[in-house]
Length: 430
Ligand SMILES: Nc1ncnc2c1ncn2[C@@H]1O[C@H](COP(=O)(O)OP(=O)(O)OP(=O)(O)O)[C@@H](O)[C@H]1O
Ligand SMILES: [Mg+2]
Image 1 (cartoon, rainbow, N blue to C red):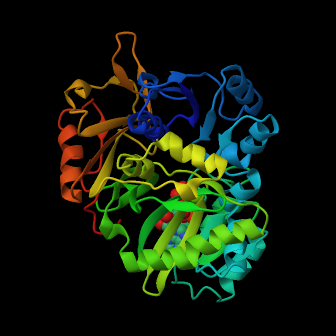
Image 2 (image 1 turned 90 degrees about the horizontal axis):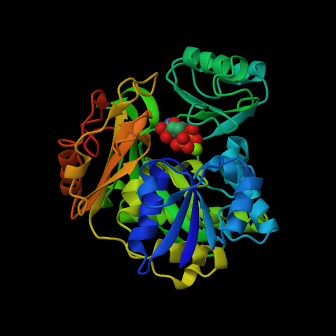
Image 3 (image 1 turned 90 degrees about the vertical axis):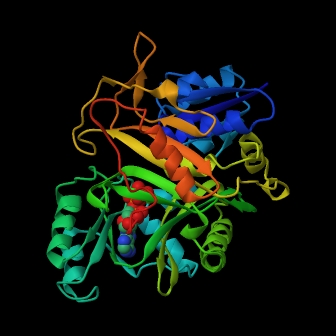
């Protein structure tokens, strides 16, 4: 029996583990580090830190793991792929060199510039004084023009400020570079860039370093409140649907962004192996690249993988062995949605500890309940412990039908203090 180890603990990893089991024609033995209570129903949980490379490698070796797959970015930028490969342990994911596409916004922007990939006009500032000087130079418009400030390093979603005015931008520079609100090391340098207007789309692909396979384009909802109000979150919902990226725009994104990226990475000596996430802004002048992530997104993954029909372990193996070009990926026709249920207070300080009711009444043949922040009580019931708690996910013939399945399940799944957006897939500005 194949033995696969997944690293990570969120809704994304639950969807990966579920898809590995659901798409495999034969039984597979799954392990997850550290996993969560929901993942524990499908995989053996392993209590090791995702950042402890030596212990992870020892576990993979001792348990004869056939392939390891990494969910979050931190272990990848820290070089877990090289650490495993040095010990001949099979792992699929980008090397630390390739993971710089996510780990450093400056590296990513300079890479886009070197390869002529359409993106927002930008400048780099090495100090708060230089950043303020750039802002005041007029290069990014006048005091009322929007501008975007980005911390160079990994900042767990806290490193980007879209500032409506120059005053807001100057405050963002102080917050990031002087007060270190995105972490001590993330914003020693920042990118200042032009604010682009348009709708966003997430385009993800599998790559073996030479060939690639696109996934259905997705869209996520970042704000906590309906109609895109309130603070940003890790993501309150996502959809896949043909309307996210029309065929002509997709063709252009592939020619102008996807292929130059993969060819550029190979030419620069770090062929990209793994899952690549392209954050696109669909502007009047065509698709432009906002960012790279070097791993699956959360909650895009839930909505994407629920449509996968090809054996995911075979996809991972072909990425590892460099034979992805020989594999044809099949996706369920139609659309999908994931609606995140969170605890009251999230993304700030949130309630925790309520027992989740109604899980047994969900029609698991139509709706998957991916766990993000739950734990198991001694009585066998699930407790809502995290900020984001569950992702109700469904595929159907079209988007309204997929949404109806998710929201239908949310009429039975309940706990005191549950909050979710009621306009996933319908919000005018996503
Ligand atoms: N140039 C831009 N113009 C307009 N909006 C932008 C621009 N750059 C970023 N944004 C907005 O800020 C969000 C976050 O930016 P970005 O994706 O670069 O940051 P991130 O912290 O790496 O995000 P993630 O957590 O999704 O990886 C984008 O999804 C987009 O809404
Ligand atoms: Mg990112």
